Image (cartoon, rainbow, N blue to C red):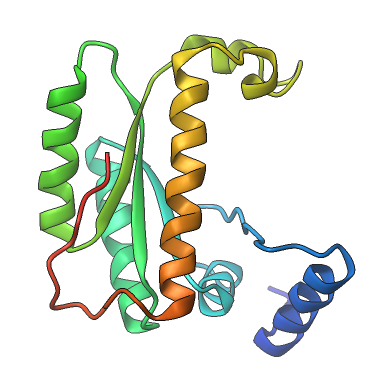
Length: 171
């Protein structure tokens, strides 16, 4: 196996240069699931770890592991539950989110329902631009606002992300 030379200081420098050149307020790093060198480096340079997970045993186990890794890196973690089956209502989704928040000691930002239109539009366009009146678009907008709030609180040090605090789920 060949080492790609993926190193922390260089990655930080590239992200800083991108942020400066393009006047970016935020950079989202989309990493694959699992624990590999590039995933750990991505987590190490970030201000907040955002986990995206379905509510199944495999994804929940993986999210638990990633939450523990983030804890070791002393990074705040939030979770987005994804592809909630249509048979699960909003009240039940909220209860599931609260249970997971308590179990993992983190904040659950939202529970996104499964929507087949998203899959149908994957290669044709951007869902939120082409379906502006869809209820899921509203959820994505609220999620973006919640993420910005969490990131800003973490950057300002307002919220205590130490692992002994009670998480505050956001619907």
